[in-house]
Image 1: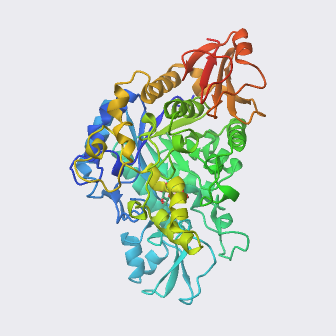
Image 2: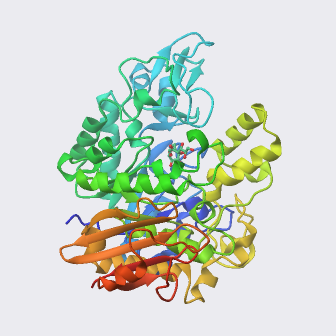
Image 3: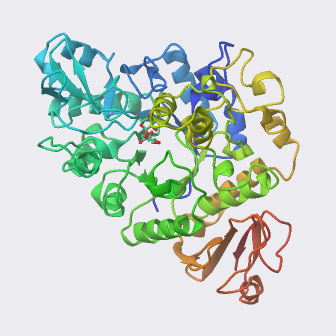
Length: 546
Ligand code: TEU
């Protein structure tokens, strides 16, 4: 049994977690302060998003030096203390490696701009006239994927912001440099890595215009990606560590290869298909309510498909790029607590390793901003301009951002009802929603029936019951438009999870709750006190025969 199957990972966005030095930005000392809280929750690993030296144009995903700590987060001594203190509490650290691109402030890029050919080979530079980008590809943050560097009279590729230049993985020297970075952090005593957009690293041999899309089909799950990952893992000696790859617009077939043990690539993968079920026509910037039927179909396809191919999913609803799940798939009003618990159980009891994003365990909601001045995210600011240019009114564009902006997931962690949610003594870089006075860690601690307490139970269940970590999964109620349900089995053991995604009572179609009970299954967890006749609003009930 792989040792990450029964583990739970907690994601920390340090800039918004806890500000220890009172400058309005979260920091590493703040994370150290809250380790006891995380140990109390019961998680096993902490994934920290990047805190490396960076101009912060994309909040640290624009790395200028992979081995130095950005002073706004703290010092190397604090990182070492964090590793040490976390270890004492049984928490393993996972650091975030942004290897698809570097900041244009990275020394390599600066030397490339200064004309050093060796470093131009580290990136993807192309000759061309200043008014004619090499291809028509689009950046994921809006606008073209190429920027012209007048210093050298060439274009460079940036799939994200223009200050995030894509690295040239075809160059073995680049790959060796990155392997050294992994060795450096491994030696510091961390336990694992998260690899940012790592399925985009292998670019095509020829760069051509994309007549059907934005260019992604040419570089997503690219031609050498599996080779590159195998080499990286082998050469840097990280095989025994826990690793997760962020896979953008990927396929099931590739994700099996990325995560099946025999290929020796990664422990597990994030995919995002289930987080597009509220994108109208597949467009993030067009609103529609989530389509629960396709959500269920996607879960079934990925859960059963990864099982068949021996791949392993990282299961999650939230991260620093996503709006809050309770606002999106649940109900942030009347049914906030019930729906947050249901959502938690729905993914924690699946086959895969669950991730909790800071604040999810207390049911934090979207930001609720009403003015563009409140946003900070580069993608949100770009798209606000784009939407307005396309003819949307400012109010319409703001309504879209209110549902879709990445800043929804980046508001400060709500620790208490004190000023600035107890996150900082200073006005924070991004404001918390007003509801922090009610929704906060201190309040959750005083409530026996809190979302926090429910998450503790979910984590404990995974640790205690092998069926959750290792059982087979098959989906139930496939025709039911309101319910996501599945069964786990391990030998003679059974565990059935039934989730109502509606704010009203719904009935089961295949078997009633009474039928399950008659088969010898009893309630082991739920967000109502008993088992009812049908599923009540946002009810989750977990039944087992042992
Ligand atoms: O995200 C990659 C990514 O594809 C998303 O940001 C995506 O562009 C967005 O959700 C689309 O709406 C990773 C990091 O998680 C993100 O924070 C970085 O901005 C990005 O890579 C670039 O490093």
